[in-house]
Length: 551
Image (cartoon, rainbow, N blue to C red; front, side, top):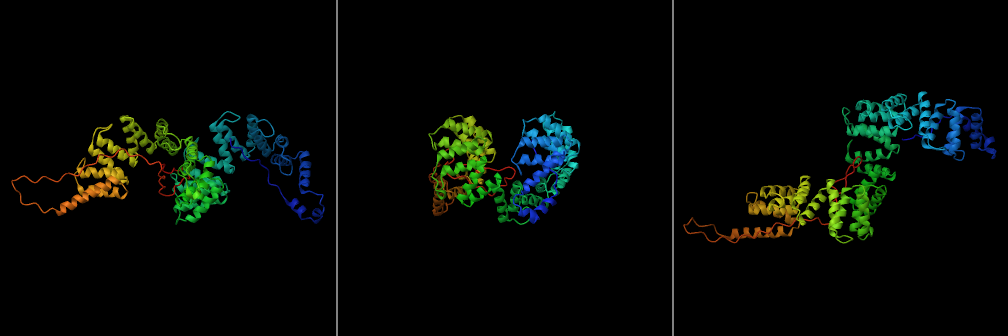
């Protein structure tokens, strides 16, 4: 249960202002304004004034003007509550629910909240809705919870208005009604409720039928909450400004809001600042923000720290440290971060920081593969292939290929070309090679070039073969470079050969020897020492943060 702060009525400060301005009082050093306040609060309280009793309860609970003493606070709240003062009844309920100054007693807390709620005190009505919804101190009753929530909202309680709006958006205990939700959020936002301002801004930013997206209103309300220091709103405002959702993009202003949110501990902003710094190769700043986010148990940041320590960073005077890398990967893996699980698999498979352990690698890859991680599915398939478990290999490689992972698409093409675990099908092989080649996979580009050169699964076309070899060769693929050279040599020889004579009954000369066809390449492996691919651009991780591409 979310408990609220103690309540005290607004006090008129005229008398204190008069004392503070009085030369007589200021000249008399023996007079303490705190003592004077306490003297008169006590005098009024001893005469049974419930407001004074409640105020003394607040002072003792919070340690203002007096030493903190929850038991004394409880006693003063009880004296005022027993006189029927609703604010004190609410405050007494809070202390009983939280066990401050006494043992926690949810049932007694509910009794006092109900007394205050029945007198129309909005915070108590909102609290009753929470108790009934969660069954705290009394039997759960979702229907009555909504009744009390509506009463509190209608009485102007912004927390209840926000809670009622969320129920309307979710259709929880009420029919879904985004329009009505916006009405309640607007009322709460106008009173200055940062939570309502944030939620209203989110609705206008994303749209929720029939409420249309309205970037200008989203900017207004997120800005209002951000200016009050609400870090979640600062993060979303940063994204709006960075992406130019309500006008021209303003990266500088966006970064300033991300900075404010990050310094306040907003983890998604910390992560985004780290990613921006990494893209700019500002490694000290990247390390700082990754560490801040990782300290909040952010799995993406923990995985990225693992990558940094695995490779080392000269700019940080960090030597490669496989032990530290494994420790960070483990932290992220405990949260089922698929990238970290895959990276642990690669470390075990390649023996980074320890002996090669293929059984452990398979276990890490299996867990990540079950989470839908295409690299892990591909590596798992490769391990199955090496162990001659062909059907399992084909299953996992197919899953990764169908998810659009280029290395797996190339491997699937190889399986179709060889007929390993699948019916031999050169046409399917060419189709999968093409999918990977179009994504820039140099091995697939080379394999596709071979098929066009030899007319396997596709019509023979040396010009097309040359084009694919060229793409692969430009990425440093040695066999593509070799075959490209052979094709150019053949074209050169053809250019030197004179046109053939008129047809003759005599048999033609023996054709030149065919260019040897290299065997299809072995299943490709990921290079664990290569750095992870940089993200294509900043990711909006305000709602669902995306991981970097793992190695």
